[in-house]
Image (cartoon, rainbow, N blue to C red; front, top):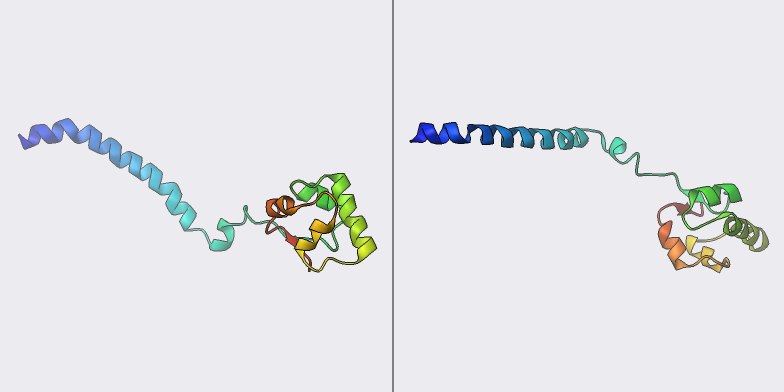
Length: 109
């Protein structure tokens, strides 16, 4: 009886083993990379809102087009450097949602 059971389920067991091996291989390869390499594609250099030009702001930030980028630069030139990222909300057309969309991308250093 045991031999018949093994013969019947051998292809199924082989298929399950193959699927598990295929799934585990990419995960193991990813985990073996150095931590710096794992997040490399996810990280982006921070944009200093006190030194970036309008083109950089418009092209690198979400929800910031050319006119808002120019408004940031004009505000900075009129009022001096930003002391915190939250100060961007003083620029017309930039609210908390825009800051949230760009969280982690902005700096004042």
